[in-house]
Length: 68
Image 1 (tube, rainbow, N blue to C red):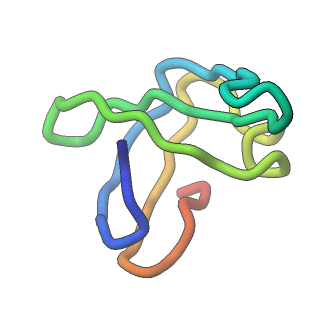
Image 2: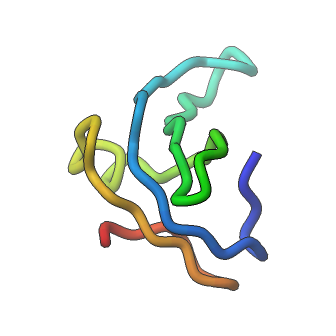
């Protein structure tokens, strides 16, 4: 799972959402990073709704992921 301290650049390959704890809806993205590895990242509702498979994301250290 991607953390707030990581820095990466990648492309959305899958979007999902689930009620893991029964009360909170979590929105996750599966991303293929520029080096070819796959990661999963939790994102907020607004960003999740804006994104489609194939969109690019950038994550800088200490920041939340954003379109890039």
